[in-house]
Length: 304
Image 1 (tube, rainbow, N blue to C red):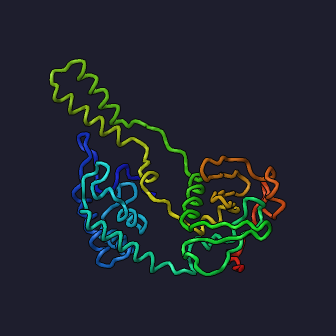
Image 2 (spheres, one colour):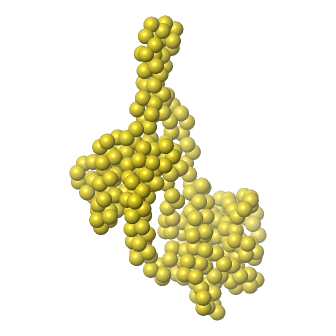
Image 3 (spheres, rainbow, N blue to C red):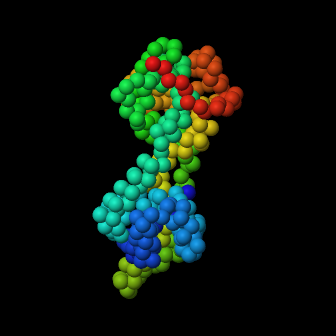
């Protein structure tokens, strides 16, 4: 995760959001080279080879930073950001991203299927098996409980987004509080002195604008948490998650080993897990304080 206080290509200057010309040129160049065929990783390697820093705190580029840059619509002028990319270029970039993603994700390697061994019926806690049959959507899970016979249909995207959201919510660090820097203190004192003896009003206004920019620079970095799409790291989720309860109504409940459960699905609540949940020990789930035995992660067999 980067430590940038501002989206790459922008800065606060005299209290206004403005472009950083050198970084804006990099954004345009990256978009052009991506359309020419360079991958995220090759673009990151090129920027690092040319010693173009991502930020002062974390100068190195990686493929994830390049990907987020290319996918951010604010570069087209949205939400008050000065435009760097025109709408047509941005649209072409997004189309190319979708094309490459489709080619890189064969049906047999659908991310949602990698979570198949973690899926459980929320009604009885038993395993869910995939159902085969004609007229099945390739981006949808068709499941049946092996014990109570509950039939569940859920789109891959819904499952992945909800599992990623609950996992990220559980692991998200607490945000740091605002801490004024020495420059903020100095400017605040200068502003107070100027207001007490306003011999030069224009100088006081200039100090106020500088103070605002300095205060903004001290704000905790929440840009990544707000702007970045949820990245679904399946391998990480499989290690972090005990199992995932699904219901016929479409609710998704992620259960973490020996901690707590978070239920979602239109107004559901959070309840304690572990020994307080009778289905855990009954169906072989790890109880509180116990570790789950790693599973092979293979796909569950289809039943017709």
